Length: 183
Image 1 (cartoon, helix red, strand yellow):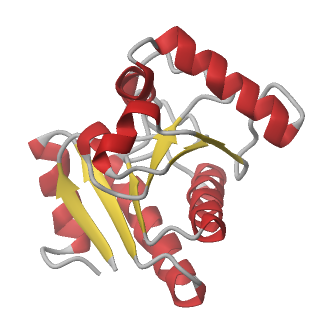
Image 2 (cartoon, rainbow, N blue to C red):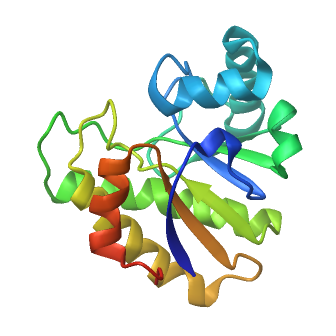
């Protein structure tokens, strides 16, 4: 099931939440900063934890499209979060093309696969790349729905996938694409 909700992803109750990160896990702005702040209180500490996890899990200091890094939820655990899954979407700067769509699909799919591998039943995504990376929200939502619909039938544990949007305007735009009851 795919469902669009309005809210703050740092307060959302799901077993995993996805962070729309930059490739170095710097968490300097947008949803990445909000998640780091909510998880650790100290953003610099969460950056340190994230970079350490990246080196342990990937053996390098950056994430490519489709790769993910998993970090502990720390203070987000009070919301039932077990994992924060960091993924990197494309930078669009207001434009959209097949290459950007392909990179976004890899980012979403990587997070879905990791969540399923971890055995979680619910996962919450922000609109990856639609914020400070400047991808058109409508294209992000359409791509999100496409990837999730393709993935869910083969998922072992994952049952609920939420797209959490902070602003009323973004929520309403996404609802027009997904529909009131979800998919």
